[in-house]
Image 1 (cartoon, rainbow, N blue to C red):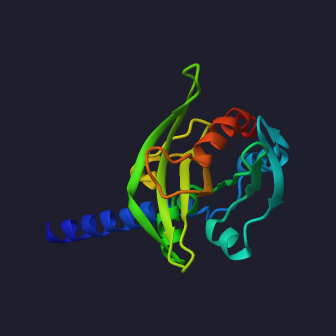
Image 2: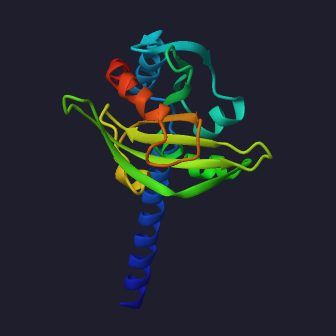
Length: 217
């Protein structure tokens, strides 16, 4: 009986170890890039709108080598747009890649590890058009520069496996069954100290960008 219990214990432990390995392989894309993910990457990189209402494409870029390697992105859209009326700018990146790395590395981590401090906590906001078309939920946070000049940066971010953006508390848990994942992040410099009345270029840009972003999926 003891021997049977011991063998059963070993079998269960081995099964858990193997299952954990398979799950981790899925999260990190250890088994290679699937054709489905490759196609998602191509669609993303082919969609670069030059104009979005008042917003005009100012420059297009690529993630840095370190960031791209860390995120393991298979496709990326990185650009800066300028509002032709106000002169305000909004930087946006959308990536697609394996669920694990894509679900991590939020602005709260990235900004705080550089010369910024977070102002207050993050807030979950729902974005919808004036005619009540719902674009999804996003996290929003504000960061203050630690430099002598100061200044504030506003950032929005969300994830999606299929074009429906959401802001879960734990993206890894929420999207664990997804073969791959998209992440969007938008940031802009605020021209005044954050308050309920401070204009939000990120939000205005997202309202123009999100309808066009459907072509990426």
